[in-house]
Length: 152
Length: 342
Image 1 (cartoon, rainbow over the protein chains, first blue to last red):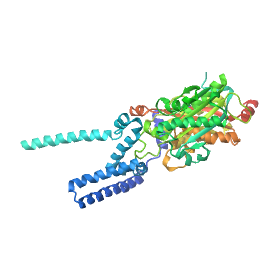
Image 2: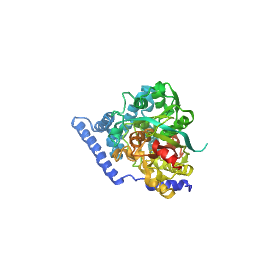
Image 3: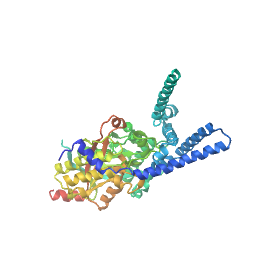
């Protein structure tokens, strides 16, 4: 039997591996992601209509999407939408909510400390860490530029 | 000892059973399962406990079919995908018999059949082989939280929620189904580090085991109704098909894969079924009933395993494939074969 090299094996696997349907995925992501953003915008206008100020209504719109995504995850149908929507549900804050809630649901069988407490951010952890780090770096840049421009 | 073990006394498959979850129930083999739990929890409150319960239920069903009590078992050989092989241990601890817990990833079914039938051939007695996998328990351990809404790649397999048990005996009679040859697989580098393409990685091990079997046994592929692999799925079957066409053309048209059979063409499972329960459940619900009815008389059954962990993949180690195999035949076919001096 002929011994295949690692590269030959990878080549054979690649030849038989179906590619993701990029166009279909992009269209579905656009439509479903767009719908999520439409819901957010409608809720923002509702809060404005109800007399909430501009800044707070934007914040409340984000919270609404977080709440709805968390509910959809807990009721068990977020993953069914997500498997078709891909980036459409992942990119808006809905994806962040889903990753936290799904982690929490999953790990409750190991208790609230060793289970939920440790594993709730098992997926969202990198986002939280690197968002915080980016915030610090961004803040430092603003501080330094602000300092320089004040001197000049 | 050689890698091909020709059993002096073939091990008879006295009875078998399979239990499954929702996806397995609505697949083409759904009606052949002995028990389907659509909620996939089997009366328990966690996925891990459900898998243990599946092992226990399937072994009880197989014992009941053979009108046997658990005290009449000498040995249980069992494996699953959970860390420390714990579903088998917890599910089967109450049977109070000799126990060998094995881990061969998804090759565990054939690995168990190899170990049990070889021991029976030497020592006599009665043994059970039990393997299980649970989709949600495996998702949690190997991939993402169960309710995480990510998009799966087209090559990704779907870990089956299934458990199957086989009762093997040293003595057999005409018309029954038995294991006569066992092949111990080699570990073959699957080259890729892509955890969502296990089938492609395992295909090379399947090829090695199939070619080794025919080389060492002197048998020809045309004697078999099917050459069955465990859970290569769509990608792995295509890879193996290409390699077999070159290396052993007579074997290629006889190849079928349990990962493609379990769910048929259902859309959500993408690359096909995987998991320890897949090859075991398809053997118990598809091939063994056909062997018992006489529709089939001789198959070569390989379970394929991807030896890896989430950490090994993240550390850049490629997936190691393995495939163990057993020859399963009707006893009357085997006696004809032996009398004709093949």
